[in-house]
Image (cartoon, rainbow, N blue to C red):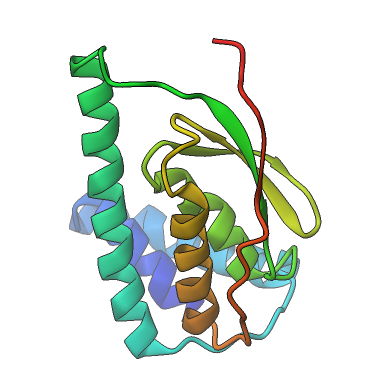
Length: 165
């Protein structure tokens, strides 16, 4: 599977140019060997129906985030209520599910992960009045379903304070 993945990546990067495969085949084999050698084998199973749902959710949230930031840039009158929100997470640190959460949460409208702790994330938000914690919780729930992990909804978040602009 890794060889196929790296071959597809090579094909995309080179536009499928036949001449590139003389370099690509050795590079693919070396990359596959190195990734196998140095990877931490953390077994996980994906729920493919949840994957489709997650992709649609992710695309929608990314679009919303882009529109939200663009509106704030183009309409300076829109309120900025900058602050930090502590978001507790149930996903185990170091797992693919946790890594996906940390990376995907940055694409929610007005959010950026600024600190990662064992069981919580500190989020910098553009508007502390926005439903950031609920959106982050919905993202975490979808990721847990994607990885077939047990998950309970908890809304135990707290606003830490406002940033200095």
